[in-house]
Image: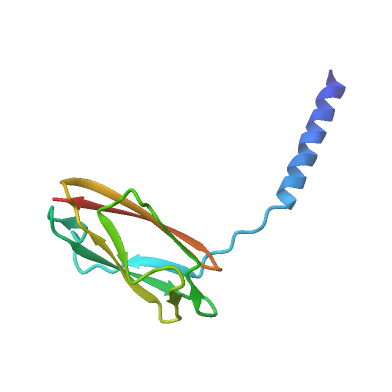
Length: 131
């Protein structure tokens, strides 16, 4: 029994070392997305009206980046992205775009989207409320 336990422990340790050896280090992304806000309640919008919520992508990479994919939650029909699409260029000066929120009913809504470049994929989760 002791011999079997030792064999299992050695085997498990060996597998653990092999799996850790193949892991690639995770580098921090050189792009970030920030909401540009003048007011605290920017994401509160009257039902049956629209409001643009501005965002800016900051590019601290060594070169311009192309948006390879823009993946949008198609079930969130009360949201629309303006000024950003596949193949948009994110220059060293950054890129500004808007998320337009047009609530059809009162309540909290969530909009998820991701932006993929050669450097990173950035995931966004935006909350807004129809009032």
